[in-house]
Amino acid sequence: MAWPLSAGSLLSAPDTKRALKGFRCHLAQASAQPLPRTAATLLDDTQRRLGKARETGPVHLIECADDALAAFLAGDRCLRALCAHLGERRLAVPGEKLPAFRKALLARGYPPA
Image 1 (spheres, rainbow, N blue to C red):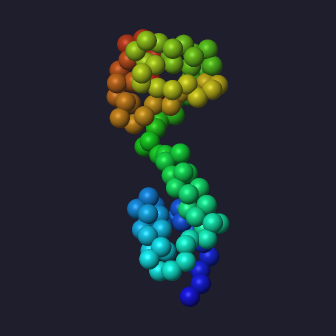
Image 2: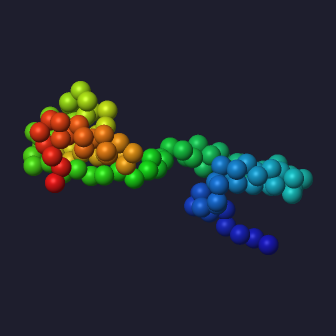
Image 3: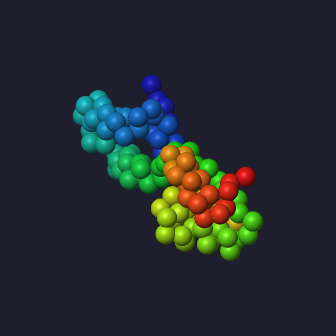
């Protein structure tokens, strides 16, 4: 039985980290020959890619009237811990920080609409 081995097929496995380790062990036990160099390289490269990009959860996008206001709010000593400046006119606020962000925004005279 043959099936394609690719980074895509390896990364699409549920619980990829454990799946890669288990797959490598399975291949080592299933063959009397060492793992081909190309397959070992593919597994190593795929393992290195794990965790390089990750989801941090939902965020709220706050659009400001202009970039100056966005920069001002993102630089505020209280607000900067609650948001990230995403370029022109936009701030990103993690979901769990939204209530504190709204409260601090209101305290600075900028009630969210």
